[in-house]
Image: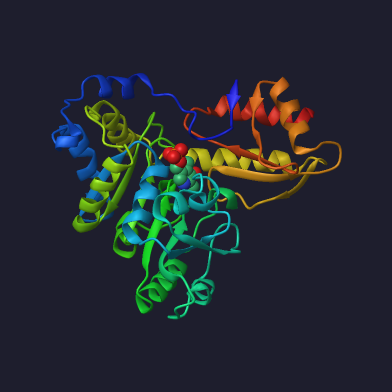
Length: 337
Ligand SMILES: *Cc1c(COP(=O)(O)O)cnc(C)c1O
């Protein structure tokens, strides 16, 4: 089985399992798990921020950040395709009682001008805009990346209007590997950053929220309220440390593999528009002979698993557990379809 459904399907390697097995642990709710503390310190240092908190999922780190930055009745600005809006169970309303202002962005990315015009005036009729949430890379944008200069322009608008800026960086390392920007630049710019260890980095679970000391102190309280306070979580955190130390640079291989697969798709009659492949995700339109679910079923017969994200579109995600041989085999199958 060659599984392109998501970069969450990776399994820990022997070396990662060994690191987990040997991890010293303690009760993290008491702040006494040395491995969780090491992971949090590592993330803090990488992004040049003040503090970090380890959580079970990226949904939780995003939701905690939104809760920290808003009051009930506030409004959050984000792209209409963003994970915080589309795939977190209505959590912005459920957890924070906040409303959402959706922007029709370009492949999941918004501009400073769009943010500016989405800010509500200081008027008693209106919800109070307090937060902007960006996603990089943008999943539903086909793994698209921001130009850092555009993020800086958005930051300017936030500063002028007293808005906080959050980054859903579930795949921030894909963006960093694809571009020349640094983690420190991101740390300087955002008020909070959520990173996922369980996506392309290959850890079995875990995400980290990074920010100021004050924000993270508040985040720990909210993590407890959300039921995310874990005890001997160091076994899992050890996988996260291993992932950050070993699996970041190799994301470039995934990006190269994604481009190779996209090229094979391009040559086929059933392929319509393909979103530009910037990182490890391919989103393409299926036309002609098949619907997207039909093509997905065809590929499944050959042991290749993809997701039809709509009646007309398929998503392919390349990751750590897709070998060069898997890519070769996939291209061969595509050519014969
Ligand atoms: C996967 C993902 C998350 C977090 O998902 P969890 O499954 O809750 O860890 C957040 N944002 C984006 C863009 C994602 O792709």
